[in-house]
Length: 227
Ligand code: CTP
Ligand code: MG
Image (cartoon, rainbow, N blue to C red):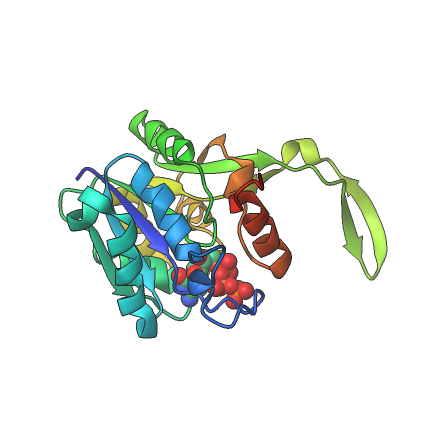
């Protein structure tokens, strides 16, 4: 395929403290990874590389089998690394030769709507080297030092970054090959390598499951409506 999605699911989920690596924590009858893969396989056909904790590669394959349907042959699972960046690098190493557009997606953003994948792919196809889905910031923000507000921050110039983040494959490969520092997301790494990063609209449903409160939100969304 021309497009690939690297789904990073190799984190431990320290802040969630859900009794298992985060991607394998249950939402309803299904895990966070199961929900994430359902949205990935509902998007445009692509190679899918799931990056799982080394001890959970078999469990990740089971989730791929359960969600890929007729796209099973497009999906592989590899073991991740110590940091998110190491895990993305492991995923990139598994890309097939014909892939030209790469999306990197957090499994923890389990309920991301398939339309967001389409928007990101369309923006890369329109010629952007790197694309990040964003939401406006809703909170009132303050710059703080030593428990004192230094100044109000104008939120209109700020945006909250989500995934999937999309890239021309050659740009992402080159940025990863050159990276010497840790970055919190892939567009930050690519921007550090000197490339412009374009934004598209993200989605409320793309929120990241980080804490128990986030998991409760995901559970409320996927719960069947009582009769
Ligand atoms: N991730 C990964 N490999 C790592 C660390 C993180 O693949 N070594 C993935 C996570 O599985 C998650 C995404 O990167 O889907 C975003 O990371 P985060 O939300 O921070 O997840 P964790 O690192 O698992 O959580 P925590 O930081 O609370 O331990
Ligand atoms: Mg983390």
